[in-house]
Image: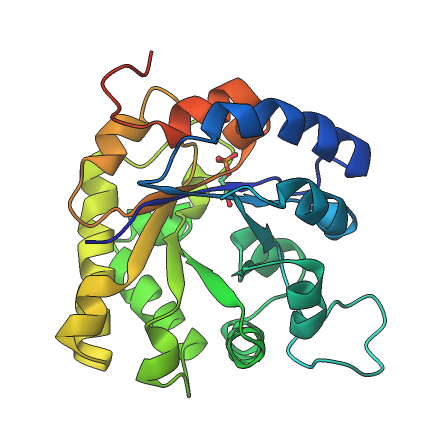
Length: 255
Ligand code: 13P
């Protein structure tokens, strides 16, 4: 059984004060939830504040990026070991906004994945095609290439701890989610990739999240798909009530 993960990627929202206010509202709402993991990914400057507030709660902390080295002359970067020390369990790597706006490549993503794993963080590796690639029916080829290159030199022992997030670029922040069928097709393909590249046990245990315009009204249908193990939520993770509803996908009493 793969325990679902619902992760909120706050992007460049919420400094320390807003982080505290948000957690004061969210934590009582989700404190009794055990059958799914709740993760928040605030900006770097809010991580320590969040970690302190999360003490004693089951909600886990993620960063939104990391460098591959643990220390050195890399102005503006934050290292995996620093994130671990700050209280992070996860780190998002290769988000499409980093690839599109900040020059991330599959090669730099690969280095970050290796660095995060070596430090003991769980990478949430983001992949996904853009609209042109989907229209040209290149989705699966793009996803396979991103996976192959991002996972170069990642051994099975490490790969089994990893989380993958399939985020079609055309669905991010547009209000147009992939349909459940479209997402399931790609998630199934990703699982098959892990079976071919590693082994069946690993493929069965690896968690594959969907991201891209996940909302209260589409999360149930997405999460009903056999190969969708959770969601990476942007805009809808910024309000506690909305995020709680997403966390409570498919619960009989969820409104
Ligand atoms: P939205 O949920 O705002 O579309 O963002 C998705 C995302 O990029 C999560 O990482």
